[in-house]
Length: 436
Image 1 (tube, rainbow, N blue to C red):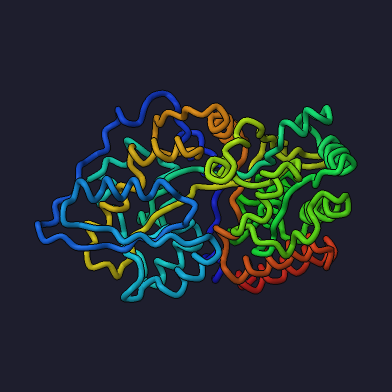
Image 2: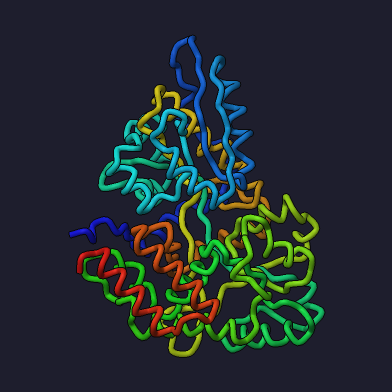
């Protein structure tokens, strides 16, 4: 059946990865990297690395690679998120494409493997002693079947970031229930603030809301079985309709800035509202800390986060989160230097890279990496304590279904469909793609 194309991540497996990955017990620099630089002869050469432009640690990692491997250079191509996805679709597997490239795992890896676009990395399991430095869950997320095709650098999750100065000004505290959350939205709006900054032209920011609300509404069984032949909860189930209704409720409450469905996240059109103090909150992944360090360092003293709270009747709990392992890196099958390409990949995920990632404000998956920033540590602890970490849907399911989901969630935010009709459309496409 075509359902085999739908790449499901068991919720328990993801949270196991997170628990084992977010270590803080000791400096990663004291952990063996499992091997030094590669020896590929004296001829040298060049390799192409494609990655997202919001990953500033890459340059340092590649400087270390070049210093340890004289004669070798890495050509860096950094691209914004949505442009990157298009660029990769066109360039992967071509003569001028990448040797090593960032991806999001999941269904992408399944497709790359089916099209013979990526190389197996199984030899690195022993040569780099991967089980000593990554949990079984982290390694497993880079596999298709029993074959390793990618390695992750960090675990990421979404939450509601808020301006502590605005909350203090209005006498607000972090909500623990949905009704308290709606009350905060009303009070910040009444005080002249945009309650929640949003930019959803590219649709994935809205899908993060949807995934999180569905997890709260339906519980962890939804994502644990959605990609199997016998999903426990259908996409038109009443709990999904209820999650869709919560999106409509937020829009009707005036939670978001004007025109948000036409604004571009990659251009910072939501972040700037938050940085400038015009918006009280911003629902986004923990890479928001990285953006703050680069774009608005003063905000680091006046921002904190809370998790989207559940409501009466929800099957999930307020501690649940949406996220996954990212970035992940793979080696293209077209590379002329596979061993050196694997070495480049290793420098992107090893102990020194993990230390850089932690300093940047993200949660590395390399075992026992020290996390010095208290707010990053809070993120790490929240991920570790979450009873479920649901995946971002556009990263793990078949492209045809993902396209429908993205459009329907944007329609919900635009009040262009009903919660029931959106659920029916998603279920219909799911059945078409899965052959049910």
